[in-house]
Length: 98
Image (tube, rainbow, N blue to C red; front, side):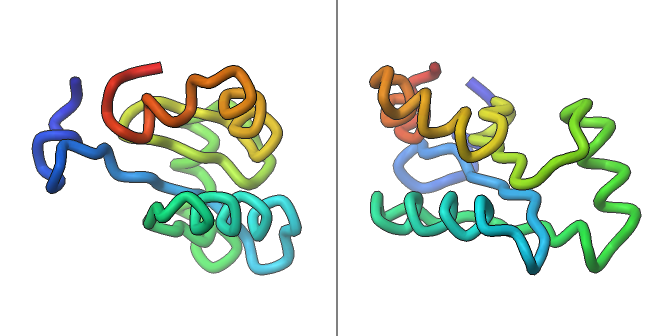
């Protein structure tokens, strides 16, 4: 898979969440990931306009949260929950691909 997997213990890809301070879906996404025992790197686009530009270039979206597992763009909270309900999120979190 990606270099991210090899760089992390257990082969788990890193999770990145682009968010803002006042975003209920960001909170919901983080609470869901916390309930699964996951950790993540949070990128606050409201504090750094350059990070917002990077997020938009990377995702072609302007809304938050935008969630990545390794190099895989999961999307927003609803996208992550759809993956979970389809049984595809857990393998992705384990580094087994979508």
